[in-house]
Length: 214
Image (cartoon, rainbow, N blue to C red; front, side):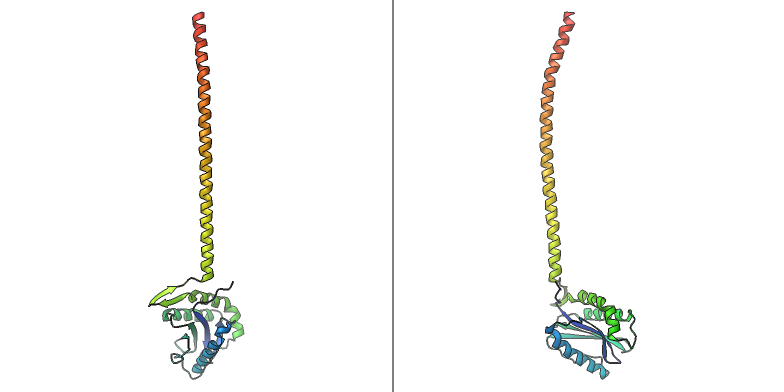
């Protein structure tokens, strides 16, 4: 089952000089986000065409927009998150990771989307998942566990508990069996000593009889 995203909606690496997206994630956009992503993309690229990298004036209803450019204002990246509870420092960290991934996978000024998207798709997915669990509430940064991952962890924990319980039960049964066998051995030993005691008395009597008769 595909894990549903909690906070992040869309992220993209852009060529600022050419005002175009080079790579983005996710590529299969959920229908519920198509309109908001399309609107944001148009506004961001429009701003870049006007040589503006300050996107603070772009208001996206129900979402927050973050943008990060390099020192030369030649390349950059932007992130769209759900609501307004995503910490700026994490957004910047995500965008830096995104830029580094693209630059370290053969990007040049004229790279096309088709060339790079395939190469970095899995790495973009990793970045997206890594930062998607972050949320800020009451000025405290939290890392929320995904529902499916939580279920898997719970299942693993239950299996460990059941395995431990089974081992304890096995140990208990083994201990009881050893106790029974020990008791049986003790009873057998008592009987043997009892019989041996009788034979010992008979032997002593015979020795005594032989000595005094002869």
